[in-house]
Amino acid sequence: MKKIYLAACAAMMALTVNAENVENEINSTSEAQASENYDAENGVVTIGSDRMFQIESKDGKFSFKPYLMIQSTANFHYYDDEGLDKAYNQDNVANSGFAMPYAVLGFTGKAFSNITYNLSINAAASGANILQQAWFDVKVSDGFAVKVGKFKTPFTSAYLTTLGETLMPCVPTSLTATTIMPYSLNAVCPKIGTGFDMGVMIHGKMSKQWGYELGLFNGTGAGSNSATKTFSDDWHIPSLLYAGRIAWTPFGTMPRTQGNAKMLNENKLEVAISGSVNVESESESTNDTRMGFEVSYLHNRWYFSGEAYWMNVGFTERQKIDETYDFIGGYVQAGYFVAPQWQLAARYDFMDRNGSSKDGVLNMPAVGCNYFIKNSGLKLSAMYQYIGRTGHETQLDRDNDDLGVAKHSAVVMLQYTF
Image (cartoon, rainbow, N blue to C red; front, side, top):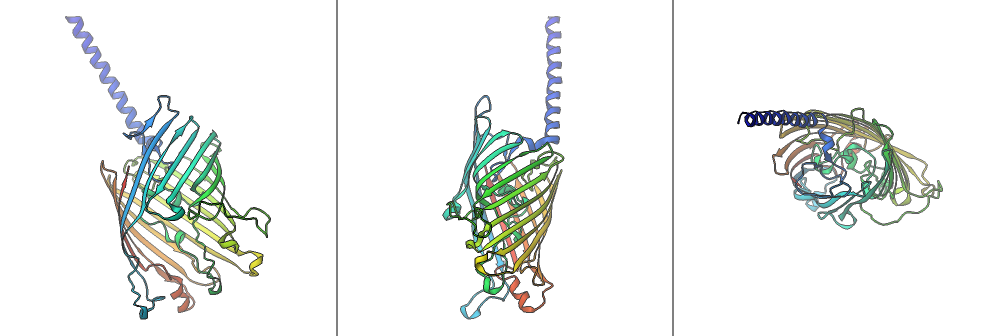
């Protein structure tokens, strides 16, 4: 009986020690490298390793992970009197009410251990935008992989962040607002941001701290899934978007999130430069060159990021216009979890929308907050943005600079992800 008692005590002690070791391992992993347990390649939501619903083979070579993201917003936009015709009863309040920017259903996974894939449909979109993403990625080695299909172009962390984990419901206006060209050229008004596109890209890690992305895209954006491009008459190369990005990540891969209640013990830094040339864009009338510099830092409950970008618009020879136009923009933003489920956010965004040939810039400060409803997949977000104008030479330039952009904007968003 004594022997049985001693054996039981020894077993209990062994179990206790083992449990403590396991707990220490879990705590150490969660505190040091929690982001490595999350998959964000789909670009929409992060999928945790503890996810209940996914299919995976025993050897880990095959996996299938469905996901869902629905965003419903309440919007209020107030526009200045400039550009409004009161004779036609145009109101200062417009583009307000309820909207559903995204209703994404997709699946992602792995096949044959070296191929990842993703397909997502945005039922809230129309036309070619319904196919939000469709790609497969073949990994030859850590330093070389080939990605083919429709996916995010390698430019600006604001777009490369997963759609469901941005700091605010709306990305910086400096990336989405159309530029203002001279009045006779208003048919040409490119945006600085490039977003989703059709193409092929090689990418990989040159070392543990350096990564690269080099791609060829149609340059037509997410609104087209067809091959519509031609050959450049000026440069005698295919009229495509040539894009690249190099990133330095000294503390490991930067998670593609600007706020995740499950990642409050991270220390990640990313510094990147990117550039692209869109040959014969804007109905074959311009060659658009873009350059960008970005810094992102995730430290425990803090998130910081800042970007600066430049775009040069030059006309093709057939347009018989010698002038070129330069536009700059950028933003700095910060977020902080004041509680495990509450994140406060602030952003300053600016844009030289009318180009360097005219004085004046747009100042666009914004504040916001996010509430992550525990164990539900729900996120409640709100933001307010103000558009200010400064430095314009004439009142007419000042009035024209914010046409089509709301002076006061407020957005409340309820999001569900699975």
